[in-house]
Length: 509
Ligand code: NG6
Ligand code: CA
Image (cartoon, rainbow, N blue to C red; front, side):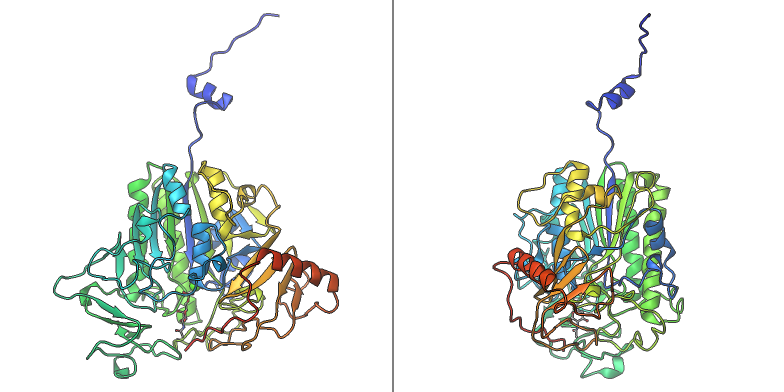
């Protein structure tokens, strides 16, 4: 038989042989909401709130039923995502004040640095909360080291949280809109003479505090910490979503031609909840519900921008939340009173600050149009696994010894083989999730804090089967002694040198 030789175009040849021509690497966007609970998105079945844009990621991507943050508060949770290391291995990874130094060393491995070294253009926009500078920050000069020193080519951030001073945007280390004749001063110890606080000038408040949050007043809202000056640089809370969406749009438009990595830290629905007037009244739940709808709009804007730039099919979008939900986190914004039938925990137990499941069991979706097939995944996946998994996806170098696990095939919905276990953390206390089970060692301390969230301080060992009972009401420690022993052995092995039976309670003032 005569042999026929087909001549293929050069590009096709390269693609077939898997040789020189690399497939184009996707852009990656990680959207991290702040305090958004498992029950706060309609994707997991909540009928009391509608989040169509977030749901689109869930329904057309991988919807994780067992997605986790490492921690039930922001700083440690973000630390793990950024470094691929358990935050309880770094004693500084706890809720930081707004003037705290950067807790990630510029020598340390980070997810953005890996992406940057790998040819990606990298950006961080929105909430930071990993510290800036080296202590005693002078906000009138470039604040360094910060995001730009640990792997981000571009950054536009709020230093800590939207309830902490300084209430200014920091772009590439510089306070935006700062005027030389009105320098900023910040203190977490004492007020500056003559500056109004919630205690001295309650008549200036448009939002009242319920616990904490009675220091400097900015934009009619009392904050944590004291600040002076920088009047024209101060943010307007109600415009924050628009401000950051604008920055995200610019970032995508400017870098659509090259692979980029974008970390977008939404400030919603963290307190103070200040949705733009466009969203006020969009739910019956008051500011918290309206802030979630605003966050959903932000996600929609990201997708729209990608579509308009023609790069939606070449972008992996990961959506998640830094920790579980809370209703009253220190302001009288009626979140509790107006919640109605809405359960932000989505049937789980606990919430923000808690060792119970709702503290760290959060919404997680991975969306990549045309590549990821709509999938519901029950695999255990933690945000801390993003560094190793995204390294695998993009060819980035992942060092030995990280706690981050390469679960790329889980992330892309091709495998259900997730983590075998995960140590979760709440204000220095730790618990173990493994398989269907959760083991919580006994800890002293109150059952609830000022938020009324249950903290998970148990007087005896707690053992719960999450598949049988997501609400963690039945302690099986006595009836399942073998499982308890197995979990304890694993837990003490994993946390060796770090576990402390006595952890001082972090008091919310
Ligand atoms: C607490 C604040 C709370 C919130 C939290 C950090 C008080 C009483 N409470 O100390 O409002 O800011 O810190 O939240 O001040 S997180 O999501 O950034 O971890
Ligand atoms: Ca948070």
